[in-house]
Image (cartoon, rainbow, N blue to C red; front, top):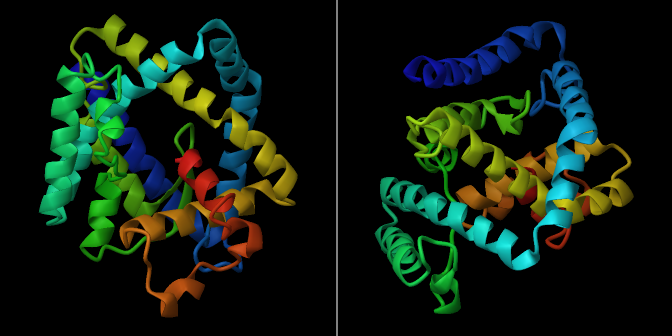
Length: 260
């Protein structure tokens, strides 16, 4: 079991290092995406797997389970996420936000029946978005090159190393009971993909180049999260080719958040 977890962590790091090594032979004109050729190949692979397997399963999941049950499942996993959102807010020195996050976990784990009901949101306790990649960014670690990881999708070098920490700290990924762990991980993955189904039509209709659209929206959204939604205006142009649609708060930002 421990060997399996270590293997997943090593695979993530290997993907980042391999992509960097390919940079010299797969360059592009975009300084944020110096290995675009490699990334587009991985993007095409992920897209093929999604269309052939993941998306049909997600559609079946939506058809089989009523909305209240799907919402309960989303809330359950969201409650687990809130634990590590609190940790990351604390690591960033955002003590009031960390207390807010911890309060969400306490309320939803008790009144919300192990998190299946999001009572905290109903009470006005705001849910935040944090992860270890954002914590690294908060303390000045640069993005590094944009990467598309097999199965995991859009990342940067910094966010890839953050992802390793996210997986290492995730209680679901580290459950000792392998069948239970795999069932929970599969359910979480399908549930998250089901939540993205409405975004598919938006991307298909809005993007002439799906790869570039998702890349620019992802980079813009991550930058916004690092600065808590208020990035410095004088540096806003750093995200090359963001495009009008990718910068729209009703399309690009929400899609970028979904694609994570």
